[in-house]
Length: 350
Ligand code: AMP
Ligand code: MG
Image (tube, rainbow, N blue to C red; front, side, top):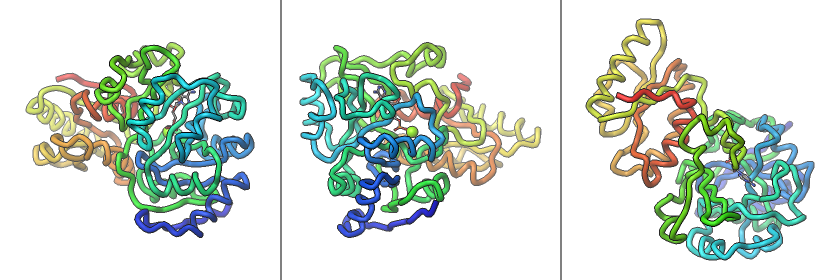
């Protein structure tokens, strides 16, 4: 398939270019586009054949449902059969933005989107290009992350091109995404609502609005992933570079010592080692491919760079990535969720 790449400046969007991509969506094609979280791979959510093409292009298992993206809060009404009262407070506070809400679906949502579930996941993104594209198409747009299934999500158009060139109709290149991790997925069909995937909107922010919010036990342990999780995406190994990832967790002085020791042993075994460090710790390491994910005092910088760093290690041909951990609060909960899954829960406590 021929893939067209359309360059856009998010501060100065050409309507003709957006209309061109919107028409590709309307005629059942696939368009990769930037959102504030990661790049998405979009199709007309009401067109079953178009949605099926997403699964093929990504190699995504058909039992992993998709998020439907809208450009206007009022669009929720026709996509769901019931709007819980908490939805209005959440939409007011966090939309447009990185929060996905799970509600009971209406009849216009085809089963291929929800993988047969009676619920649908909906989000209104805040990226100006995403909003313009959805609005000009006049459609609800089904869009998972625009990567090959299982790989780290794409946070710039180059990542999308690496994974999907030749498999989709259009890739819109509008630079890097801000948040860098996927949206928070919140099931509001239950009381209290449950976080199925931590993301750009934090547990603490949700608690402030809802009073009480639960987290799915599958978020914290791989043992729970084997039970039937509420969010089917949870059960897959995910966000994984080719290299094996090992997380080293504990007091920072000890972590660096252990990482240096492990790196030396791995090197002696003929393996190429990558170290995922931070601005505060990068100088503690030597003789390895060292990448700083960001600033520990500003965890959002680490969120923003994490997937890019994991992809960069693969480019450098690293065999094993030794990764520092971060605290499990605020956006740190989402960072550790992605890192734990990238590592297949291979964690060493020191
Ligand atoms: P992605 O779009 O690749 O970031 O993945 C979307 C995520 O949303 C997956 O982890 C899905 O399991 C989750 N999701 C989508 N629809 C539903 C739903 N109806 N119920 C629970 N989780 C969902
Ligand atoms: Mg994904």
